[in-house]
Image (cartoon, rainbow, N blue to C red; front, side, top):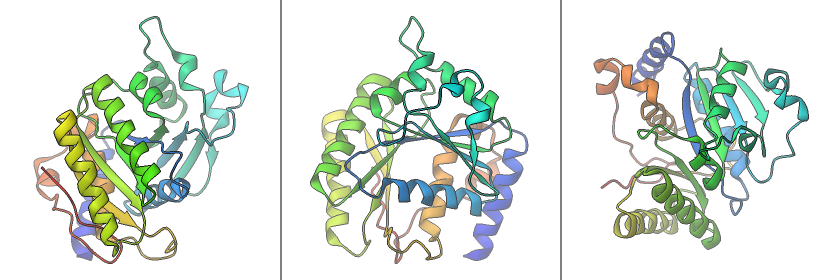
Length: 261
């Protein structure tokens, strides 16, 4: 297993040596108390894959963006570790709204401000995200936990995105102990509702117990992170060997089963 993950990391480093940053859209969910821990988990996964990551956080709980960001965004990017940077961006995407109602210009501004990064985790609400995303092949990530309100919010985000952007494939990252049968039922419920009412699919669902912050990352978490990268536009230029190396997600102590259509 470790050799396969090492090979994947090497393949990703080669891929990113010749492509621009990959976008990973994460739909904010204010009903998930540990959403920050889930974002940190993703940053940690990409760091373990040897990639430079910028977390652009436009979520509802973030402090108001500094006015300096509108003048020089690069000055507002905070280095958190050797491989992770952070930009507080609440309200910032809407400053780039054009007369067509699109805020896609914000994405170009982020690339210009941080040209050295490999992965840009974009955390925002569904309404904001829908105004920014123009690439039909992206796979948004939904956050949830076992609170019914978080599941309702996750489905509402999926519905908004599916109807406004046409994006029909999603992944789910849940904050809860993976041994809970409830986690399996929640993922199945999201998958069935998405398919029945929207014609959308929940391609995979992984659970992580955020209380186990010091635990080694599971192969499932790393694979989920990698799958999200391969769904982003630059991933189209990945080598056939790298694509072929993708393995189905499997349950483990920290990961829930995958649900695919």
